Image (cartoon, rainbow, N blue to C red; front, side):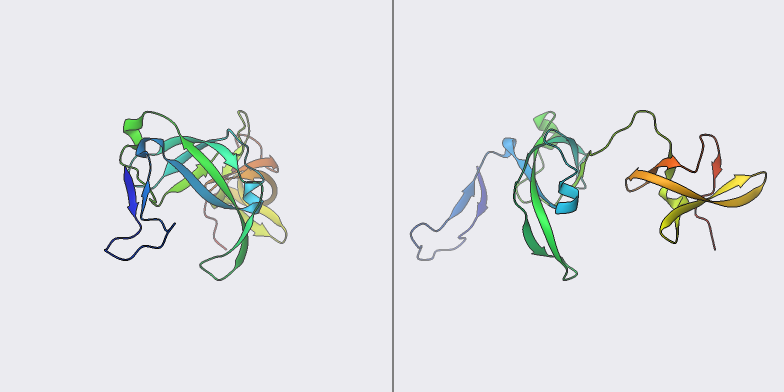
Length: 175
């Protein structure tokens, strides 16, 4: 199928210049540009999810991590090192039939999993100097405690020390 018209009107063509982009919409892949510091944490075969494209999340997996990075200027004007990562779409073709060429998507790539770990909401954590801290409810009193965290995502952080299972942690602590 024609995915994109490069030359849309009648013009004199230059030899070798593309006129259209063709492809098989059923075999789309997603190429994302990750910050190099994030790309080094990704493994080939890692599970991923394609989200915020207009439909339900689509399961995917990493098929390739480019071996070389490149410099790109962010929207804020910051020079960043990025690495391209290629994702193959999993699941039934009907689930992704409406996803098309050059669509904007958000991607989640699984880089860490732990079956038995303690975690706390990020909304309970705050910085105390160079360390993380939280307020723990002890006998009806909020007590500040330093916490060592491990892995984190957009909602939770893994607790390595400082909080025990079953303790009550205070969310959104005020000053």
